[in-house]
Image (tube, rainbow, N blue to C red; front, side, top):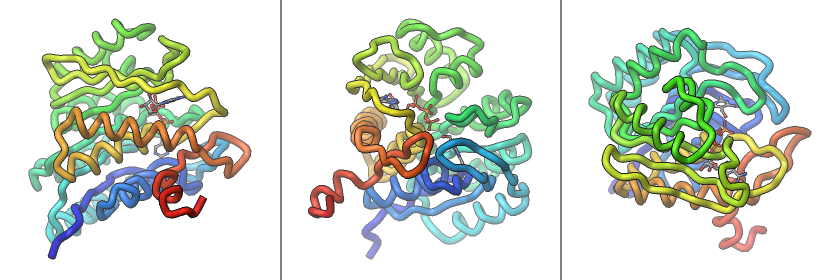
Length: 272
Ligand SMILES: Nc1ncnc2c1ncn2[C@@H]1O[C@H](COP(=O)(O)OP(=O)(O)OP(=O)(O)O)[C@@H](O)[C@H]1O
Ligand SMILES: Cc1ncc(CO)c(N)n1
C-alpha cells in the first residue's frame, strides 16, 4: 500500500550538501515524503564558494524526467537551479507534457557566495516559461528585483513586487525577506495569492552567514503541498521548519553554515 507521497526536486547538486539537491532530499526525508531528483547541473561547491559548474545536457534532463513520470506518481515538484536556456525549456516542456501539479519554483539566480547559478541571459526565459507553471514561486529580494525591475527597500516594495510577479502567471508569490532587514528583529516573508497578502514573520537569527535556506524552504513547501496542505498552510509550516533549521545551522566548514534539516527529529529521538 502506498503510504508516502513521492516528491521530485529538479535542481543542481551542491557537493558540500548544504544547498541544491542535497538540501532538498534531506528536507523531503524530514517531512516523511519519498524524495526523487532530476539533476540539472553538478557544482563544485563548499561553505566558502562555488568553484565550477558542469551543466547536464537537455537530453539527459529530459530522460531523467521521463524515467520518473512514466513510472511513478509525482505529488509535487520543486524546481531550483536551472542554469541556462536549454535547461529551462526542456523542463517546462516536460512538466507541461506530464501535467505536473503542485510545482514550487525557487528562481535561483546567484549563490550566497555571489556565483551566477542562472545565466543572466536566461532570466527572461525562466520568467516566461516556468513562472506560469508554478503553484508557488519563492524569490528572495534580489531575485524579485531582477524579475520586476524594482528596487526593494521595505514591505510596501515587497508587496508591489509580489503583485507584479503574480501578473506573470504563478498561482502564489512568496517574496522572502531574508536579505532585507526591514525589521532588524524579524525576517518577514510576504505571500500573495492574487487577492490577499499574508505576512510570515520569524525572529531574525543573528548568526554567522547561512546557506541553503531558500532551497530548504521551497523543498518544504513542495513536501507540504504534496501531502495535501493548502498553500497558506504549506508555506506557514515550511517557514516554521526553516526557522528551526536556521536556528540550529551547523558549523561544518570555514564559511556559510548549512541548515540543520533534522533538528526536531533528532531531538525527539534523543540523539542530540
Ligand atoms: N537570519 C535569518 N533569521 C531568520 N530567518 C531567516 C534569516 N535569513 C533568512 N531567513 C528566512 O529563510 C528563508 C529563506 O530566505 P532567504 O531570503 O535567505 O532565501 P535565499 O536567499 O533564497 O536563500 P539561499 O540563497 O541562502 O539558499 C525565508 O523564510 C527567510 O525569511
Ligand atoms: C546547487 C545549488 N542550488 C542552489 C543554490 C542556492 O543556494 C546553491 N548554492 N547551489
